Picture (cartoon, helix red, strand yellow):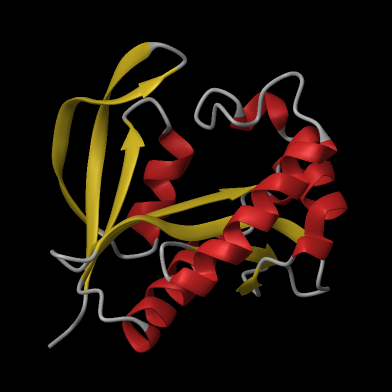
Length: 173
């Protein structure tokens, strides 16, 4: 199993790679990530990357590309919904279909958590995934996140309520 993933900040130059990875994985991503819809276009990739570079500068979010051992763009991970008052953030991730099952998302979660605790004052990272999203839950478990429970009607996806598994990764004292 190849688990040699690395993460790096996304760049505006990633638009084509992001678009291709998302479009090739639409069937698997769309149920959990409404942004990856049937009409997803390259301009949406460009706009999102521009937004994420700005968010990194102002500290309101941190988006990373997930790369495999050969340097290929395999997906993304990041911190968003940052709550400065409580020093917590949401941690999300996705991996393109052709690279699933290789441990890349698990390794990316570990690297992103380490980065967050080294470079920010955050003390808590939360992973919130629909209980129907078995792959995402498996990644959280394998990455060592603590399963805290099920939050009823926690997220809306495509206009439908979903119960969600809630996981945490906390800064070690």
